[in-house]
Length: 195
View 1 (cartoon, rainbow, N blue to C red):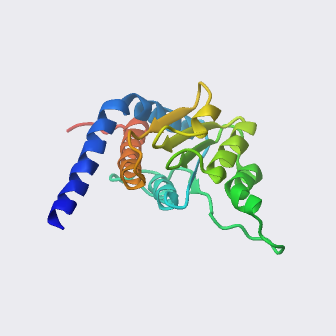
View 2: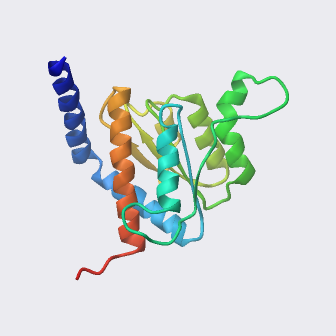
View 3: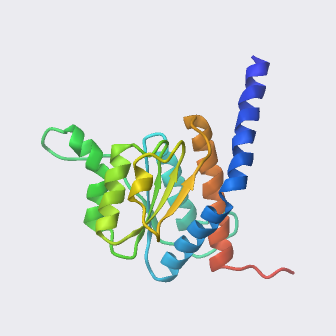
C-alpha cells in the first residue's frame, strides 16, 4: 500500500511539474483577462462539470471574499448545478443547466470560467456556446486533449490545458491553477508595496 501511495504522490508531482512548464503564458493571459473584465465593471461567472463544481464555487468564493490578503469584494458567481422546473426533467435540461443561467443573467462583457475534465462534457459545451452568443470571453480549464471545447474558442479566449488524461490529476492541477490565478489577479488589481 505504501508503494501505491508514493506512486500517487509522484504522479501528481510530475503532472504539476509538466503543467508548470507549459501553462505560465496561459495562466498569465487568463489572469489579465479576469482583471481587465473586473476593472471594466463586469463579473466572473464560473461553472464546472460535476467533479469540478466545487472548484467553480471555490474560485467564485475567493473573488467575493479574498485569497490570502484581505481586499475589496470582487463580483463573481458560481452557477448552480440544479435545474428546477415543474415538468418532467429531460436529458436536454441537464445539458442546458448552465446555458440557461448564462442566457438569463450574463451580460456582454462578463467573463465565463469553465472547468472540465476532457472537454467533451455537453453541459459545459452548451454553457460556452451560450456565452459566445452574448459576446462573452471564455476561459477554459481542461485536461486531456481539450475535446470539443477547444474548437469553440476564439482569439480572445484562453485555454488552460492540464497535461494529463487522468481525472484526479486534472482536478488537482485545476486547484493549483485557480490559486495561481487568484494570486495573479490580486497582484494585478491590488499591488502590494514592499516594505
